[in-house]
Each structure stands twice: as structure tokens, then as C-alpha cells.
Length: 518
Image 1 (cartoon, rainbow, N blue to C red):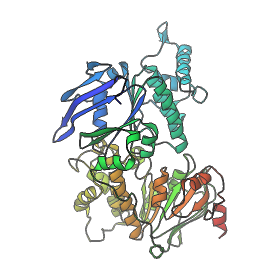
Image 2 (image 1 turned 45 degrees about the horizontal axis):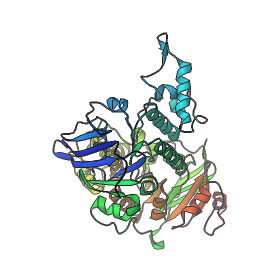
Image 3 (image 1 turned 90 degrees about the vertical axis):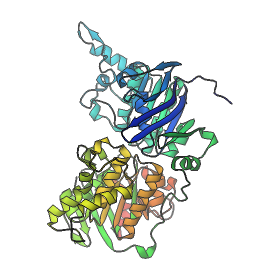
Image 4 (image 1 turned 90 degrees about the horizontal axis):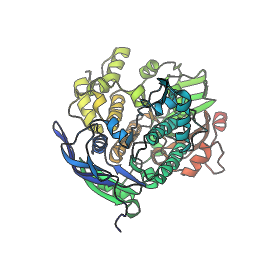
């Protein structure tokens, strides 16, 4: 049956070229009111370019954009926003040092006698927040930097409502959210649909795409592969459209018992300002997955082990030797690598070249240890191109500044940086966040290869299928503690019981206190 509603936003034959690259090639799509329309594809498929064309950040070389039936052309995202098309990027466009009200009405504050009318500004902010049922959890006067990520996202959505937006583009809106926060976002989206808003939803998380969207458009290499209704397709079919072939296996096989070796890391009763009585072992050849809700202590555990926010009591042993890990420099010197959750703030040098970002750990190790790499040379000139090819970084040159790569390609460079090291213990915090499905498969295989080579791997992920599919053991955190340990192939429900602070009655679960007594 044909759609009865007329599209709010439509693109016809949009083409956008960059030097040496056709980013969009004759792309057409329609976005209807009261509908979530997901746009999916591999990194580099053209998703972000299309969104930037829609909001006026890029001008198309060919094609037409229709908004409410009329051809339009925006010269700047502010112009698109003023006309009712808003975008929420994965990295929010907010002012952290200003309060909520100032962010929502920035540049449009009500005035009285030439001054900002604070009372009216707060009143309008509360009215907007009421439309999202958020007036009781977010104060207009709260400094933005004091809010958790999920509430900052609500502020972004409130800003779009304040502009009376008809179209809201959400670029990876769930990437930094816990499962509970994703559920809250889903409820907010339903409220927006009730306002007859059209929502364009970009995500690599198929569980959420199929839960939230009504339609899916697939892009590949700048071209539209097709558009389908959610009820008429499946994740496997969408993956095949994205990559051009079937992915027979999402995850590599788990370690065999004989492949798991000696203990490389042993934490005994580790505690700091947040973590409490952590007892954990990491063995050569195994991947230990860490699960838990946002704020459970997952990242804090990684920071403590790597010396960013070290344990203040307890003990850490590396390869049987007691060691005080009180700085990342010491951790790196003792062959530890850390792929951080916060890529932008902690993982990259955005203004430096791809090559320099990849080789930074090699150069640091050479400086610390005053030694050469195993083959007797620095490996620098040859190693960077090899790793770029291995993780499929898509860039015209290794000399390009990292800031000009997509988020997914930036994450691949972060992985390359540590693959270039001689690390034997790896901490991966959200290693596949913002990465497309085929690249995820290759990264999963790389992580498993590290384990097969005898490395010990601690992998933190908010995606339960990833934790279940990759882990030889699963550790679940809650309230700064390890609430239990589960065997491989445990169920999502078993993990969630422990992640919410409840003890599992099923076999195979072991609490942190029980582990410390063994």
C-alpha cells in the first residue's frame, strides 16, 4: 500500500563530489511525518555527507531538496534550523559552561529593557522540557557540564522542539547511552512522533534500528541500495544490502581450554574512590568481557588498571609480580594497551596526521625502554600502512589530519595505535562504538587474534550481543563492584539480573566476594 502522507523532506538525485571521491551518487529518499526513517551503511557509505547536505553544511553538486513540497537550498545549518530542520550529532553541539536554558535558547533569549529576561527564559525552558516529561529531572539553571550524557541529549532534543522543528536528524544518538537510557530515548522519540515530526535515525546498532524505525534506507559507496519497511526485512537482509554479501558469522570462535594460559593480571581487593573490593584475574589467551549499566564502574575499572585513576588499596600483580600501577606511563612500559571509551578526549590527536597517531605508542615505547622493535628496526615507515590496511582505515593519505576522518575511521586508528605496540595485556573500552557491521567483524577477529597470540584481553561493551559473542568469561559490574561472573554464552537476562544488583540463582554465577575467598 502506498504511503498516504506526503513527505516533509525529500531528496532527489543528490550528488556530492570531493577531490577524488564521489561521496553521494544520485541518492533519492523521502522522509514522512510521524515516522522514524533509519539510514544505515558502512563507514564511508555517505550517511554523514547526506545529512550535511540536508542541513546546509554542504552544497550538493547536483540534485534537489524539497522541504514541505518546495525546493529549498540552505547555506548554513543555522538557516536549516531556523526553517525547521535540526540535527543532533554524536558529539553534541552544546555549550558546556552555560546552563540548560541558555543552551536551548542560545541566540534567541527573551529580553526586557535590553537585558535577558531570566524569568521568561526559565519559564520557556520549563515549557519545552514539559513536552518531554523532563521538567522534574532537568533544571533550567543546571550547568550543562553537570548533566549526564543522556540528559544532555534531552537538552539537544529540547532545543529542536524550541525551534519548532519538523525534521530531526539523530546521528548515532545511542552510542554513548546505557540500555536504560536507550529505553528513555525511545520513549522520547515516540513523543516526537506524536507531534508529527519526521525523524532520520542513523545508527550501527541494529537492535535499536529495528526497535525504533519504521523504514530503513541502505547506502553503500555513496549510492542508495534500497529502502524497505522494517516489517518486510530482517537484520541479515540489511547486512547483506550494506556489505554486498552475507556475513556467515558475527563473532569468531571462543578460546579452547588448552589455549588459555597463565594469569597475566591479578587484582586483589582493589579499591579507590568509586571501585570497591575488586578481585579479578586475566589469563593469557582469554577475553574477559565486562558488562554493566552506565555508571556501574566499567570504565572506572579500566582507568584503575591502566593507572589513570589507580587503585588506592589492594594489590595488582602482572605476570606474578606485584606492581604499583599509578600512571599510564608505567602501564605502557609494562606492556599494557588501552583503547579508551572517550575517543575524542582521550584516544586521539585530532590535529596530527593519521601516521603520527598510529605510531605514537611505538615512539613512546622506544623512548621509555630505549629499545628497538623485535625485527631490529623502528618499524615506523612500514608499520603504519600495514595497520591501516589491516583495519581498513578509509583515507586518501596517511598524512591527512585525523580530525577529517569519520568517527568510525578514527576509532580504527585508535585500534591501530595499540596494535602497533608490543602490548601483552589489552583493555578495550567500547572497541566497536560507531563502527559499521563489517568493520566490527574484522575488529572482533583482531581482538580474538590477540588472545590467540597469548595476550590477555579485558573487553568492556554496552552491547550485550558483543559481550556474549566475544567473551570467554563475563564479569558483570554494579555500583562499583563486581556483582558476579558468568560463563561464556550466558543469556542477556542472566547478565541483566547481575547488572541491576540482583544475585542470579542460575548455575555458573559467582560473586566478587566469593571469588575473593577462593
